[in-house]
Amino acid sequence: MKLAWAYSHNNGDAEWAECDLRDWLTDVFEAPTIRLRPGVTHDVREHVRTEFEKEGWAINVKIDPDYDLTVFALRDDLAVHLQTGNMSRAPYDLLKLQYLYTAKRIEAAALALPTKAGAQALGSNIAHADRVSSELKLFSRIITVPIFLVAFE
Figure 1: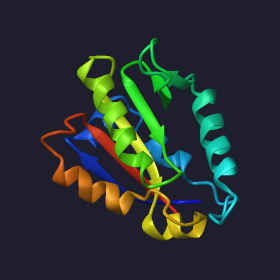
Figure 2: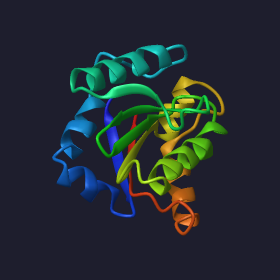
Figure 3: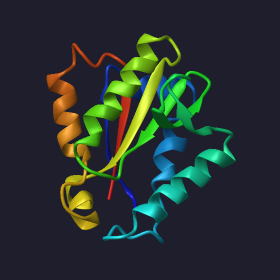
């Protein structure tokens, strides 16, 4: 697995750089021992979870105590979501990040997904950064949270 590219929505990359976490975040997706293929999503998620836990991030955090909705990781005023599943989950992830931002629990977020080619290597109808980055542009007045989109393959 390697970082392919990144996209900044509403200056999301600047927010991560200001916290001195931009390079650390992109480095998490440099894992040459993990090759994207069917059945490897558990390994991807485990690798990313381990890297975040080592840096003190809370994992699988509820966005509201009354609902069973979570984000992948949360620390201070930053949230991260990792999506390696069905394409229909990606807009839902954006909605959860927007909720945290509107509720003033975060100042910025990151969303990590495979590229289109990476998603095809994982399986069929897998969420991918190519589509999400395009849709973020379309919904820029609705999804206002600063997001640093990380694409890996």
